[in-house]
Length: 177
Image (cartoon, rainbow, N blue to C red):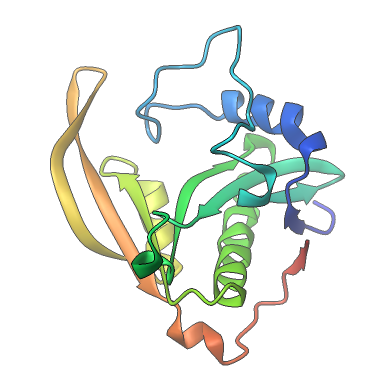
């Protein structure tokens, strides 16, 4: 894999991101049914390009991460939440998810955030390990919150402080806006 670049999404990324989202769909991480044509737009009023970090490898979109404020409340403005992470199978295991997570932390810190949170399905062990290795800890579990493919699945709430990331700690990933 050539140099990995993480940047903010642009409207022209919509088709590639939509195709990636459909290719990577799995009941391991999605509570929504498998997308079927006609497909909804990837970007809409609630999912705008500025919310997405895009990883580009070999000149092609290799993954994305959606990072947003979890609520519009001022009292919650110090928190950023990951609401979606996908990596193309062609680059899986090459550090794309870690680069996206590092870029998300950098962006959150630059925006003045002090905490980052996410939700992950309890049976998604690979994602949980990835998040734990990035400093996230389980902060709550909603047992059997979802019924997927006939099985009850926990909704695991994870979070981490961003305080340690304010002292100029960097990982060398190139991040573009």
